[in-house]
Image (cartoon, rainbow, N blue to C red):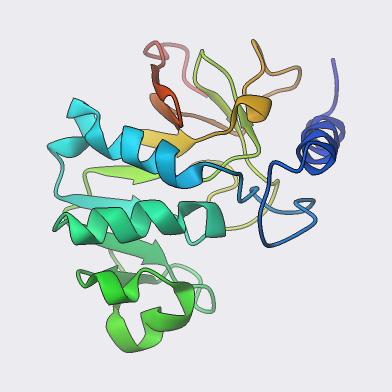
Length: 190
């Protein structure tokens, strides 16, 4: 079995080699901003489990920018973790606030993501069982542990049949450019 760090390096190397990422480059050390992230966001937001929700926690990663923008345009309220104040979130309702640079002027700082119904976390890899591997550090590295459903977006190169290392957390939906993978309910708890 590979270590999580070694597997992350493999995924980042393959994404870079295949030119499947946009800024920031190289993808190493990040949850990759993969090509077709917008299409994956459209697919996830259209899924019935997500379309019915009105309040989401969404990560600040660049790969999730299209999802934040589309969700805000659809009238959803978002909580995005504050990059400089641990434990704080930006509350957003205006699409103009989807970019990190706009959050200080468009968002309202808050300590609790009140009313949040689910969370979308970025990933380095995820598998069909729902095992998710993040970048290894940061706000959502081990999942949120808020007893909310968690979702992610992924490029096909980020979707192994099975993670070859222990996951950081579990997700129930994986948005891809080609559709949404519905992961089985986890009973053992991570």
